[in-house]
Length: 279
Ligand code: PEP
Image 1 (tube, helix red, strand yellow):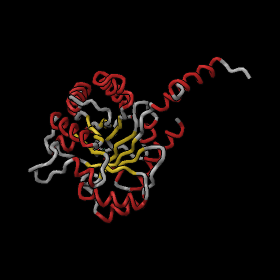
Image 2 (tube, rainbow, N blue to C red):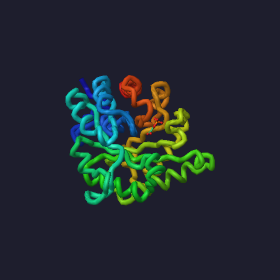
Image 3 (cartoon, rainbow, N blue to C red):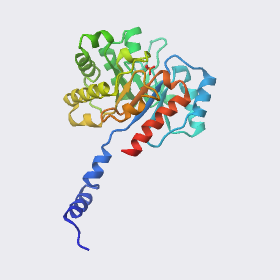
Image 4 (cartoon, rainbow, N blue to C red):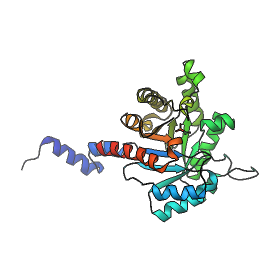
């Protein structure tokens, strides 16, 4: 049977560059993440129970960030259960090693099974006075050591009310990504006013802000910005997850409170997995 012009061109493209343009589109799709931030919660027994209960997913990347003391046990529990769940730290030091009492280096975190690391969470910006310069040094060290940074940005309520959201995000993005060539990082937009308050951003507002973040990323890194996953964080839960998952620029969620309960966290994973299956 004679080939249509369309299939002739598709075959030609496939033979020349290894895939069709449609397939190329699929390959450049962003990864969807559902990430748990346990903050300073849980003990060893809770951790074992959580990883027994939680299900992994083939459709979304699930990552759990326990407190530093629980990282290695969590790594063992995940391996024992044979589940496809990534491990992340909640913080990393900017230096390779040295006299920094109480800190953890990127190589130590990798050594205990971490692949990811939160950097610049607003609680650290607030309580440990982390600024954009420090965030940038941490991002540099994480990337150099092979950890994937999950860079958190977001405006306070006061900044939101003063209509400074875009200004704040612009400064945080340029600060965090100064001299970074790699595109091996994840961004989490976490409006400070939505964290732990139950006052989540509407999906429409989050989408609008994510689109702005991607436009700034384009100024920083050009077309590679389209491949960066931007997650929403701030009182995300099983009930509002579907609204976020329907938005084109929201590539998953970073979850605090609702990630402490394995069933609730599973519920959020399922919502995003369904979204991926339908896309
Ligand atoms: C967070 O701290 O990263 C977070 C999103 O918390 P919560 O989901 O509890 O608002």
